[in-house]
Length: 333
Image 1: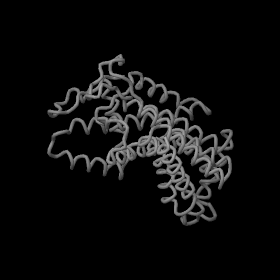
Image 2: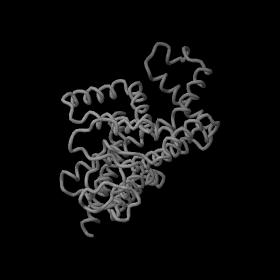
Image 3: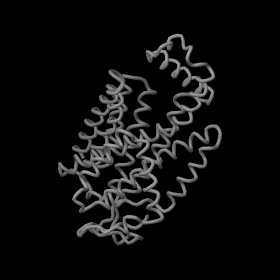
Image 4: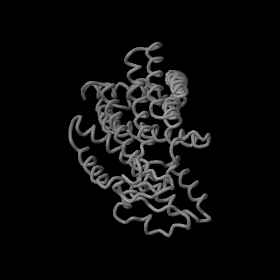
Protein backbone atom coordinates (compact mmCIF):
# COMPACT_ATOMS: atom_id res chain seq x y z
CA UNK A 1 0.00 0.00 0.00
CA UNK A 2 2.78 2.44 0.89
CA UNK A 3 4.61 1.67 -2.36
CA UNK A 4 1.40 2.22 -4.31
CA UNK A 5 0.77 5.58 -2.64
CA UNK A 6 4.37 6.75 -2.97
CA UNK A 7 4.62 5.68 -6.60
CA UNK A 8 1.30 7.36 -7.44
CA UNK A 9 2.17 10.61 -5.64
CA UNK A 10 5.66 10.79 -7.16
CA UNK A 11 4.53 10.04 -10.69
CA UNK A 12 1.62 12.45 -10.32
CA UNK A 13 4.15 15.17 -9.45
CA UNK A 14 6.15 14.29 -12.57
CA UNK A 15 2.99 14.51 -14.71
CA UNK A 16 2.18 17.94 -13.25
CA UNK A 17 5.71 19.20 -14.00
CA UNK A 18 5.51 17.93 -17.60
CA UNK A 19 2.07 19.52 -17.95
CA UNK A 20 3.36 22.87 -16.67
CA UNK A 21 6.43 22.68 -18.91
CA UNK A 22 4.13 22.32 -21.92
CA UNK A 23 3.08 25.97 -21.54
CA UNK A 24 6.48 27.40 -22.48
CA UNK A 25 9.08 26.99 -25.20
CA UNK A 26 8.82 26.27 -28.95
CA UNK A 27 5.50 25.01 -30.31
CA UNK A 28 6.85 21.54 -31.17
CA UNK A 29 8.32 21.08 -27.68
CA UNK A 30 5.06 22.19 -26.07
CA UNK A 31 3.09 19.75 -28.21
CA UNK A 32 5.49 16.91 -27.41
CA UNK A 33 5.34 17.57 -23.66
CA UNK A 34 1.54 17.79 -23.71
CA UNK A 35 1.42 14.55 -25.72
CA UNK A 36 3.57 12.76 -23.11
CA UNK A 37 1.87 14.21 -20.01
CA UNK A 38 -0.26 11.06 -19.33
CA UNK A 39 2.80 8.77 -19.38
CA UNK A 40 3.66 9.01 -15.64
CA UNK A 41 0.02 8.32 -14.74
CA UNK A 42 0.00 5.31 -17.07
CA UNK A 43 3.21 4.03 -15.45
CA UNK A 44 1.60 4.33 -12.03
CA UNK A 45 -1.55 2.52 -13.13
CA UNK A 46 0.07 -0.39 -14.98
CA UNK A 47 2.93 -0.79 -12.52
CA UNK A 48 1.13 -0.45 -9.16
CA UNK A 49 -2.55 -0.78 -10.02
CA UNK A 50 -5.30 1.58 -11.10
CA UNK A 51 -5.57 3.01 -7.58
CA UNK A 52 -2.02 4.28 -7.97
CA UNK A 53 -3.13 6.01 -11.18
CA UNK A 54 -5.95 7.66 -9.23
CA UNK A 55 -3.46 8.82 -6.60
CA UNK A 56 -1.20 10.14 -9.36
CA UNK A 57 -4.12 12.03 -10.90
CA UNK A 58 -5.14 13.56 -7.56
CA UNK A 59 -1.54 14.50 -6.69
CA UNK A 60 -0.91 16.00 -10.11
CA UNK A 61 -4.16 17.97 -10.03
CA UNK A 62 -3.33 19.28 -6.55
CA UNK A 63 0.10 20.47 -7.67
CA UNK A 64 -1.35 22.20 -10.73
CA UNK A 65 -4.02 23.82 -8.53
CA UNK A 66 -1.35 25.04 -6.14
CA UNK A 67 0.67 26.81 -8.83
CA UNK A 68 -2.06 27.66 -11.35
CA UNK A 69 -5.83 28.17 -11.33
CA UNK A 70 -8.76 25.85 -10.57
CA UNK A 71 -9.68 25.87 -14.28
CA UNK A 72 -6.21 24.64 -15.30
CA UNK A 73 -6.25 22.00 -12.55
CA UNK A 74 -9.66 20.82 -13.75
CA UNK A 75 -8.34 20.64 -17.32
CA UNK A 76 -5.42 18.50 -16.14
CA UNK A 77 -7.76 16.17 -14.26
CA UNK A 78 -10.27 15.81 -17.10
CA UNK A 79 -7.84 15.48 -20.01
CA UNK A 80 -4.92 13.63 -18.39
CA UNK A 81 -5.75 11.95 -15.10
CA UNK A 82 -9.28 10.59 -15.52
CA UNK A 83 -8.88 9.02 -19.00
CA UNK A 84 -5.62 7.29 -18.10
CA UNK A 85 -6.97 6.03 -14.77
CA UNK A 86 -9.94 4.53 -16.63
CA UNK A 87 -7.77 2.87 -19.28
CA UNK A 88 -5.32 1.39 -16.77
CA UNK A 89 -8.26 0.07 -14.75
CA UNK A 90 -9.61 -1.67 -17.85
CA UNK A 91 -6.16 -2.96 -18.84
CA UNK A 92 -5.80 -4.73 -15.48
CA UNK A 93 -9.40 -5.96 -15.34
CA UNK A 94 -9.72 -9.76 -15.31
CA UNK A 95 -11.96 -12.65 -14.31
CA UNK A 96 -11.59 -16.41 -13.96
CA UNK A 97 -11.72 -18.15 -17.33
CA UNK A 98 -14.52 -20.38 -16.04
CA UNK A 99 -16.80 -17.33 -15.76
CA UNK A 100 -16.20 -16.27 -19.38
CA UNK A 101 -19.24 -16.42 -21.67
CA UNK A 102 -17.09 -16.66 -24.81
CA UNK A 103 -14.47 -19.16 -25.92
CA UNK A 104 -11.43 -17.15 -24.86
CA UNK A 105 -7.95 -18.47 -25.30
CA UNK A 106 -6.25 -19.86 -22.18
CA UNK A 107 -2.74 -18.53 -21.62
CA UNK A 108 -2.17 -21.01 -18.80
CA UNK A 109 -3.12 -18.61 -16.00
CA UNK A 110 -6.81 -19.56 -15.93
CA UNK A 111 -7.64 -15.85 -16.16
CA UNK A 112 -9.36 -13.90 -18.93
CA UNK A 113 -8.07 -10.35 -19.26
CA UNK A 114 -10.09 -7.44 -20.57
CA UNK A 115 -9.68 -7.51 -24.39
CA UNK A 116 -7.22 -5.03 -25.83
CA UNK A 117 -9.64 -4.24 -28.66
CA UNK A 118 -12.24 -3.01 -26.21
CA UNK A 119 -9.64 -0.79 -24.56
CA UNK A 120 -9.05 0.79 -27.98
CA UNK A 121 -12.78 1.45 -28.40
CA UNK A 122 -13.04 2.95 -24.91
CA UNK A 123 -10.13 5.22 -25.74
CA UNK A 124 -12.03 6.33 -28.86
CA UNK A 125 -15.05 7.17 -26.70
CA UNK A 126 -12.92 9.09 -24.21
CA UNK A 127 -11.13 10.92 -27.04
CA UNK A 128 -14.49 11.86 -28.55
CA UNK A 129 -15.63 13.33 -25.22
CA UNK A 130 -12.35 15.23 -24.95
CA UNK A 131 -12.80 16.54 -28.49
CA UNK A 132 -16.21 17.88 -27.52
CA UNK A 133 -14.69 19.36 -24.36
CA UNK A 134 -12.14 21.19 -26.52
CA UNK A 135 -15.01 22.93 -28.32
CA UNK A 136 -16.62 23.89 -25.02
CA UNK A 137 -13.37 25.43 -23.77
CA UNK A 138 -12.87 27.47 -26.94
CA UNK A 139 -16.37 28.91 -26.93
CA UNK A 140 -19.77 28.36 -25.41
CA UNK A 141 -21.63 28.77 -28.73
CA UNK A 142 -20.87 28.28 -32.40
CA UNK A 143 -20.70 31.98 -33.20
CA UNK A 144 -18.04 32.49 -30.52
CA UNK A 145 -16.11 29.54 -31.93
CA UNK A 146 -16.28 30.96 -35.46
CA UNK A 147 -15.03 34.35 -34.29
CA UNK A 148 -12.19 32.79 -32.28
CA UNK A 149 -11.09 30.67 -35.25
CA UNK A 150 -11.34 33.64 -37.63
CA UNK A 151 -9.13 35.72 -35.33
CA UNK A 152 -6.65 32.87 -35.08
CA UNK A 153 -6.50 32.54 -38.88
CA UNK A 154 -6.02 36.29 -39.30
CA UNK A 155 -3.19 36.26 -36.76
CA UNK A 156 -1.58 33.25 -38.44
CA UNK A 157 -1.71 34.95 -41.84
CA UNK A 158 -0.33 38.21 -40.47
CA UNK A 159 2.61 36.43 -38.82
CA UNK A 160 3.30 34.08 -41.73
CA UNK A 161 5.67 36.48 -43.47
CA UNK A 162 3.88 36.08 -46.81
CA UNK A 163 3.91 39.06 -49.20
CA UNK A 164 1.04 41.37 -48.32
CA UNK A 165 0.21 39.42 -45.18
CA UNK A 166 0.48 42.42 -42.90
CA UNK A 167 -2.14 44.35 -44.83
CA UNK A 168 -4.15 41.15 -45.39
CA UNK A 169 -5.00 42.31 -48.90
CA UNK A 170 -4.60 38.82 -50.29
CA UNK A 171 -7.27 37.25 -48.07
CA UNK A 172 -10.73 38.78 -47.92
CA UNK A 173 -13.13 38.62 -45.00
CA UNK A 174 -15.27 36.17 -46.97
CA UNK A 175 -12.30 33.87 -47.42
CA UNK A 176 -11.45 34.16 -43.72
CA UNK A 177 -15.04 33.19 -42.91
CA UNK A 178 -14.87 30.20 -45.26
CA UNK A 179 -11.57 29.06 -43.72
CA UNK A 180 -12.99 29.38 -40.22
CA UNK A 181 -15.97 27.21 -41.21
CA UNK A 182 -13.63 24.53 -42.56
CA UNK A 183 -11.49 24.71 -39.42
CA UNK A 184 -14.58 24.45 -37.21
CA UNK A 185 -15.81 21.34 -39.02
CA UNK A 186 -12.39 19.66 -38.72
CA UNK A 187 -11.53 20.73 -35.17
CA UNK A 188 -13.47 18.17 -33.08
CA UNK A 189 -12.38 15.19 -35.17
CA UNK A 190 -8.75 16.31 -35.32
CA UNK A 191 -8.76 17.03 -31.60
CA UNK A 192 -10.20 13.59 -30.80
CA UNK A 193 -7.62 11.88 -33.01
CA UNK A 194 -4.82 13.75 -31.25
CA UNK A 195 -6.12 12.89 -27.78
CA UNK A 196 -6.59 9.24 -28.71
CA UNK A 197 -3.08 9.03 -30.11
CA UNK A 198 -1.71 10.44 -26.86
CA UNK A 199 -3.74 8.08 -24.65
CA UNK A 200 -2.92 4.89 -26.54
CA UNK A 201 0.72 5.69 -27.22
CA UNK A 202 1.39 6.46 -23.56
CA UNK A 203 -0.53 3.38 -22.44
CA UNK A 204 1.53 1.24 -24.84
CA UNK A 205 4.82 2.87 -23.83
CA UNK A 206 4.04 2.49 -20.12
CA UNK A 207 3.19 -1.15 -20.78
CA UNK A 208 6.52 -1.79 -22.49
CA UNK A 209 8.42 -0.07 -19.67
CA UNK A 210 6.63 -1.94 -16.89
CA UNK A 211 6.91 -5.22 -18.81
CA UNK A 212 10.67 -4.76 -19.15
CA UNK A 213 10.96 -3.98 -15.43
CA UNK A 214 8.80 -6.95 -14.40
CA UNK A 215 6.21 -4.61 -12.88
CA UNK A 216 3.38 -5.07 -15.40
CA UNK A 217 0.35 -6.55 -13.69
CA UNK A 218 -0.94 -8.60 -16.65
CA UNK A 219 0.44 -10.66 -19.57
CA UNK A 220 1.28 -8.70 -22.71
CA UNK A 221 -1.62 -9.03 -25.21
CA UNK A 222 -1.23 -10.03 -28.82
CA UNK A 223 -1.98 -6.62 -30.31
CA UNK A 224 -1.92 -7.92 -33.88
CA UNK A 225 -4.91 -10.13 -33.05
CA UNK A 226 -7.18 -7.47 -31.53
CA UNK A 227 -10.89 -7.56 -32.34
CA UNK A 228 -13.64 -5.01 -31.74
CA UNK A 229 -17.21 -5.49 -30.46
CA UNK A 230 -19.60 -6.52 -33.23
CA UNK A 231 -21.54 -3.27 -33.21
CA UNK A 232 -18.47 -1.07 -33.78
CA UNK A 233 -18.77 -0.76 -37.61
CA UNK A 234 -22.43 0.24 -37.23
CA UNK A 235 -21.53 2.85 -34.62
CA UNK A 236 -18.82 4.22 -36.91
CA UNK A 237 -21.28 4.45 -39.82
CA UNK A 238 -23.86 6.24 -37.67
CA UNK A 239 -21.27 8.76 -36.48
CA UNK A 240 -20.16 9.41 -40.06
CA UNK A 241 -23.75 10.06 -41.15
CA UNK A 242 -24.39 12.23 -38.09
CA UNK A 243 -21.51 14.53 -39.03
CA UNK A 244 -23.87 15.99 -41.63
CA UNK A 245 -26.14 17.32 -38.88
CA UNK A 246 -25.99 21.02 -38.16
CA UNK A 247 -24.78 22.64 -34.96
CA UNK A 248 -23.17 20.92 -32.02
CA UNK A 249 -24.74 17.56 -32.89
CA UNK A 250 -22.72 17.31 -36.09
CA UNK A 251 -19.54 18.53 -34.40
CA UNK A 252 -19.95 16.00 -31.57
CA UNK A 253 -20.47 13.20 -34.12
CA UNK A 254 -17.31 14.37 -35.87
CA UNK A 255 -15.36 13.97 -32.62
CA UNK A 256 -16.52 10.38 -32.10
CA UNK A 257 -16.01 9.57 -35.79
CA UNK A 258 -12.42 10.83 -35.51
CA UNK A 259 -11.76 8.50 -32.59
CA UNK A 260 -13.27 5.50 -34.38
CA UNK A 261 -11.27 6.32 -37.51
CA UNK A 262 -8.09 5.98 -35.44
CA UNK A 263 -9.44 2.69 -34.06
CA UNK A 264 -9.83 1.28 -37.58
CA UNK A 265 -6.44 2.64 -38.58
CA UNK A 266 -5.00 0.58 -35.72
CA UNK A 267 -7.03 -2.42 -36.87
CA UNK A 268 -5.58 -2.06 -40.35
CA UNK A 269 -2.07 -1.94 -38.92
CA UNK A 270 -2.86 -5.00 -36.80
CA UNK A 271 -3.91 -6.90 -39.94
CA UNK A 272 -0.65 -6.00 -41.67
CA UNK A 273 1.39 -7.06 -38.63
CA UNK A 274 -0.52 -10.35 -38.33
CA UNK A 275 -0.48 -11.36 -42.00
CA UNK A 276 3.23 -10.62 -42.48
CA UNK A 277 4.41 -12.79 -39.59
CA UNK A 278 7.11 -15.20 -40.61
CA UNK A 279 7.92 -13.35 -43.84
CA UNK A 280 11.56 -12.50 -44.44
CA UNK A 281 10.68 -9.07 -45.88
CA UNK A 282 8.44 -8.16 -42.95
CA UNK A 283 10.82 -5.70 -41.17
CA UNK A 284 11.48 -3.73 -44.37
CA UNK A 285 7.78 -3.59 -45.25
CA UNK A 286 6.75 -2.38 -41.78
CA UNK A 287 9.52 0.24 -41.63
CA UNK A 288 8.44 1.52 -45.06
CA UNK A 289 4.80 1.55 -43.96
CA UNK A 290 5.42 3.59 -40.81
CA UNK A 291 7.75 5.89 -42.73
CA UNK A 292 4.96 6.64 -45.20
CA UNK A 293 2.55 7.23 -42.32
CA UNK A 294 4.89 9.91 -40.98
CA UNK A 295 5.43 11.59 -44.35
CA UNK A 296 2.06 11.28 -46.11
CA UNK A 297 -0.03 10.27 -43.14
CA UNK A 298 -3.49 11.23 -44.39
CA UNK A 299 -3.22 9.59 -47.81
CA UNK A 300 -1.87 6.30 -46.45
CA UNK A 301 -3.94 6.30 -43.23
CA UNK A 302 -7.31 6.24 -45.01
CA UNK A 303 -6.58 3.07 -47.08
CA UNK A 304 -5.24 1.35 -43.95
CA UNK A 305 -8.39 2.28 -42.02
CA UNK A 306 -10.50 0.92 -44.91
CA UNK A 307 -8.50 -2.30 -44.64
CA UNK A 308 -9.42 -2.40 -40.96
CA UNK A 309 -13.10 -1.99 -41.86
CA UNK A 310 -12.80 -4.76 -44.47
CA UNK A 311 -11.74 -7.16 -41.71
CA UNK A 312 -15.31 -7.05 -40.41
CA UNK A 313 -16.62 -8.64 -43.63
CA UNK A 314 -13.74 -10.62 -45.09
CA UNK A 315 -11.89 -11.81 -41.92
CA UNK A 316 -8.53 -11.30 -43.59
CA UNK A 317 -6.41 -12.52 -40.69
CA UNK A 318 -8.35 -15.76 -40.39
CA UNK A 319 -7.80 -16.38 -44.12
CA UNK A 320 -4.06 -15.78 -43.93
CA UNK A 321 -1.67 -18.65 -43.28
CA UNK A 322 -0.27 -17.70 -39.89
CA UNK A 323 3.16 -19.16 -39.08
CA UNK A 324 3.36 -22.01 -36.55
CA UNK A 325 3.16 -20.89 -32.95
CA UNK A 326 0.99 -17.83 -33.59
CA UNK A 327 -1.82 -17.51 -31.03
CA UNK A 328 -5.33 -17.97 -32.43
CA UNK A 329 -7.52 -14.97 -33.11
CA UNK A 330 -9.95 -14.23 -30.27
CA UNK A 331 -13.63 -14.14 -31.18
CA UNK A 332 -15.36 -10.80 -31.71
CA UNK A 333 -16.47 -9.56 -28.31
